[in-house]
Image (cartoon, rainbow, N blue to C red; front, side, top):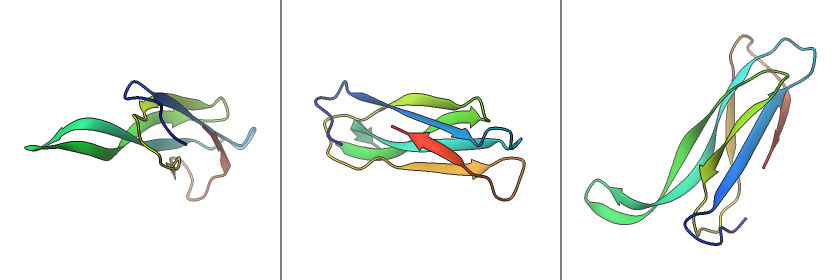
Length: 88
């Protein structure tokens, strides 16, 4: 996916399987242009997407003018293993 300019945002959505009773939190990879300490440049960072259950969750995060693949990290909250879906 390629951002068109620095105002580009991408929506990451995710949910657990319906009827499973599972809960998850996630974060998605985004980019920003600015300072990291005293160095100016284009930086990659992870943004929290919040909490989801079978009702779903997600958030828009900055993509910027960067060609990169979409990346989402999820973590189960109330079980050791959980299953679900994510979309961009």
